[in-house]
Image (cartoon, rainbow, N blue to C red; front, side, top):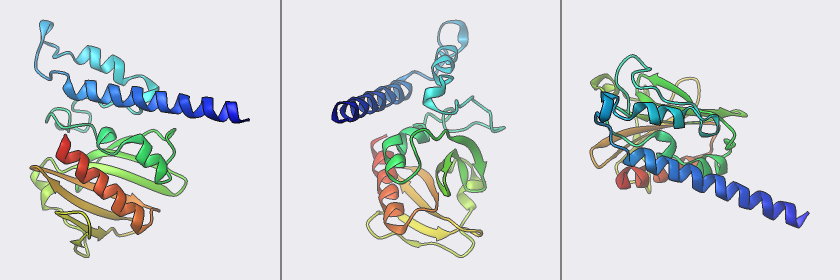
Length: 190
């Protein structure tokens, strides 16, 4: 059994490295128009459509420009698969791309747990506040936490001119803080 466990672990590590490399390549890809005026979108959409890499983002799919059009890192790279898996949302969970009153982003839900990362791209997103208010989140500079009606909570994170919202449900406070630190760190390095 030891050999199979090691082989499985190596395969998971290889898949994780491939996913990271793909996200890095996407982040570095030019977003302007290239030959033919398609901006390279045809090549990117072919890669993004691969079901192993989650729900593909299509420019304008939410009715107005989203994070890709703004040149921001995909939420799946800001909140990596390994971290979501450790927090209890399995790596096999596909994201759903949604717009909420507080932002546009991705949400992963499985087994009573939900983790989402949303960018606040528009004035209506930035004006939104948790209904019962927000308090500073210890250990995460510039972050505040608030509860959502119906359960769950949000962490508002501002880093390097980028505003994001981490949404969690079914995750304890310790994991929520860890996820918020991950988001904050990855926003500052993006």
